[in-house]
Amino acid sequence: RPGAGQNGSMKQNTCEPASAREPAVTSAAASLDAFGCTFVLAPAMSVRISAEDALLLSAFAVADLSILVESECQVRGGDWQAVVPKLGPDARRVHAEENAGGASVISEALSMEVLCRLLGARLVCTELELRYFPAAGPITDYAIALRGGDVLGVSVTRAFSFGEAALSVPHAAALLSKKLAGILHSSRTCFNQNLSKQILHVWCDGAADVALLRLAFGLVGPELSASTLVLVTRCENLPELFTEKGKAPRKRARPLKGLKDEAHLAALAESCPLRPQQRRTTAVDAALRAGSRLRGKN
Image 1 (cartoon, rainbow, N blue to C red):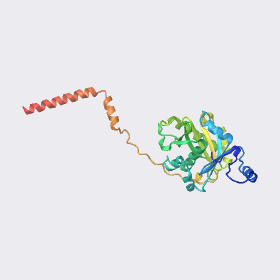
Image 2: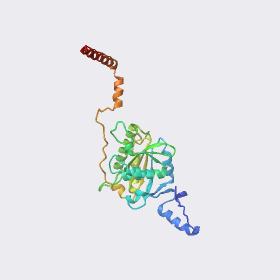
Image 3: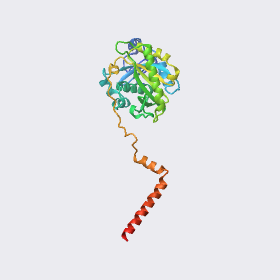
């Protein structure tokens, strides 16, 4: 991880004496609360996660167990349009491609970037590339592959105060319950990827909301949390993440109900139990027509 050192210290390339650098490092560690943390520096952002949570994130990403881990993200650039060119190719693809609608483009693209930096994940399928049967019901936002080849689904949501009402534990518990239930449904119905393991990535804009989400997660029953890994990421310097406006979903072109292609029609014809009798009838009709033509000539 570029720039990450042990116990949260930052590697510096400088010619200053060590004695001149020590006070600055000590001051930065005190103001950042960096001791025992891992920092990941990337062109679009920096991510801070405790050393313990970083270990749990890597371990529980492939374990059939559920846990909640916390992280913090600081974007570089000031606004979203300045951030986009600095994203990795997978995050830019999530941002550029159509999704199923809703105000989630920024949160999903930023989620992909964070998981790429923290887990070395690569994008496997975007939202509309995942297929489900039955098609109606909750869906997963995208699928990733880890370094070892394990494929995981990722569902992204945002937890923050709506209007004048502050985020509360009951509201946070309801949000988590709804999203975790949706993950269980999409894991069962997705047929072009094995999404038996998923990540629920929750964005929030304050430390108080992170604490509420942790309390709410303790109220969610194991039948809902199942094996889902919940990653809560705090981001306080990108307002567009929480103010993004939704857009109408793009409607997919659907074939007419009951319409069958040529291959399907051919298969039905071959499997028809009356096919031998139809062949005999056709042969008799042809013979009768031939006889009629001969009589007409005579």
